Amino acid sequence: MTCVRILLWFAVAFIAAIAGGLIYIKTQTNGFSARAKPTAFETMAARTARGLALSASVRERQNPVPDSGQTVGEGREHWADHCALCHANDGSGNTEMGRQMYPPAPDMRGQDTQRLTDGELFYIIENGIRLTGMPAWGSGSERDRQDTWKLVRFIRHLPSLTALELEQMKDFNPRSPQEIREEMEEQEFLNGGPVHPHEQRHEQRHEQRH
Image 1: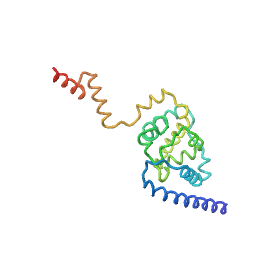
Image 2: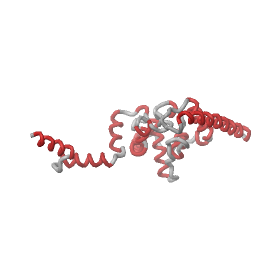
Image 3: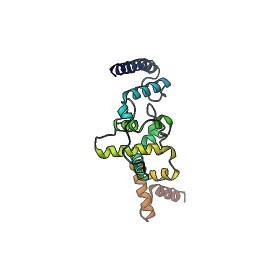
Image 4: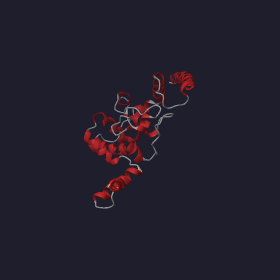
């Protein structure tokens, strides 16, 4: 077992050395810009290093929360509130934040994510991934661990997400102060309250023309 572990670490060191050389060459061209797309080798090296870093006990860990509609629903709400900013409601990663990361947020519906074990997904959510935009969300509390396992159930559900579910998720997406203000103004208008600022400007322009 010790010899195998030593060989694995030598493999990691070898990959890291090659990756370091390629990164040096690449930075001479692009600097440290996050606008460039990761090369195929960078992607392969990152996935290999991640795989070697995760122990068998992590990969084989079983999801303790039931695979039920309630569990998936709670994971869906948590995803919309905490994860969708980078990963999008549908898991595509097609958001302004997700697209501009280096590497970009992955498509969570694809095989690169879906073929990970539940234990691997849990570990990544809890501990993050170094040198990427993926933070460590785990706090160590039992409640947070349960929420993470529910997210894993929802990630498995992403490829079959329905249009109705996507529409429902919008209610749980974080809103900017401007969006909240616009919603309040709209509600006031519908209730017969103050007219929207843009409506006021429209009326002023109308009066000026006449």
